Image (cartoon, rainbow, N blue to C red; front, side, top):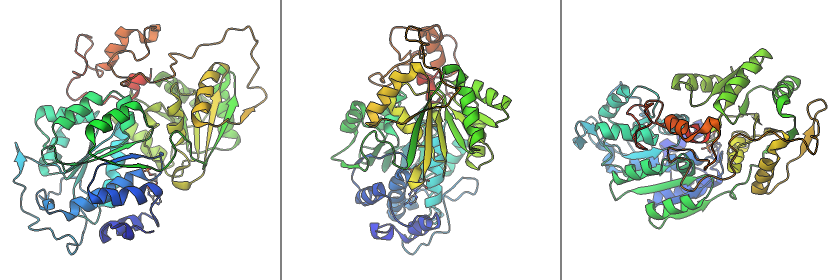
Length: 489
Ligand code: AMP
């Protein structure tokens, strides 16, 4: 099977061929024809399966072939576009320079909305839209918080066909009347389960209420849950169900290994592993932002070049660190679970769990950063005695026992009566309805680090210290704090 036999236009097939794709992946084989037919979709796809193209390609096809494409065809060189040198033979676009008259307050209608949980994923998805649509006459834009809102307003004013956004910043625009969602034909919720985990459900519902009733809905999730079921039931109209990989399984292309290690020797073991095998491009996950910063400092002392990416970093620092890591000029990127979902780093060879995640599903997402699209990858986890219960949960989830290894000098079997260190703020399950209630997600017992007061202050998007704001009334321009706002310390 090829991309052209799936019914995609020559322009799109040409763009994917130039990207080096020779045949569609299983999710693409199923999703592309279904999306082209115009119905709703509920799709579960293992991370790294090519799911972005599975919704982007047919979306581009549908928008470029429908007559509405003329509406938003205002050309403006200042707009970041996915406009290319598209042939007009297959998709005649009438009067391309005619300004769009269907506007609200001067803001032209957007035709497709893709919502993503994180800023990094929004940027990445928009890059794909831009890339796959380079021979088409459609404009796309990524919209997220942590950066100035004004250039975004200008772009919206100039006309955007496909908007890839995080929910919080999108609502800021809604509040300011600078985005026109009245013409949305297709809505995509990407990594919907993550958005729910992050507590975006109210934001999502608010956005849904602003969209035209008649539209196509595509809901993509990585891990199925009751809340996804509930969301799908309220959103989708007789959806086509697609699931290409079993739930909660790890890709066969990733070799997994556990190193048993004393808690206080993890850093030394990591440095040892990196140096011994001369690892390059290592993505290391820590449980906390503070832990990520500390590890970067310690690796620096071991003369291993590392940078951290987490929610306390400015957006420009996050973007710069990720870009350096992606282009191979940074040896180690230390991340909290902000980087566990969706990020596509081609041929990433090594993922290290410096700490095991508190939620077993996050293990699957973390190690899914490697071994993508059939490439081989290695995922190692440094597990101390107190993390054994977390390891057991993970193994239960993935239905696999992971091979253990001990390296002399790094692990001493604990004394049976010795009390163990506790996993800070450990929890096994996501609370129903997500982490976000803008309060501590970890139940009644609060550690000094997570007193409800502190938790509430932190969740008011880094702005108000009053703690008197109502949940969800974050300040304008401060939306889209990263996932660890709720799940990380
Ligand atoms: P995703 O699951 O969308 O993050 O995609 C994972 C990776 O697979 C990305 O690097 C894509 O560029 C790549 N990819 C997507 N579709 C194909 C395909 N048909 N053939 C080869 N690689 C692909």
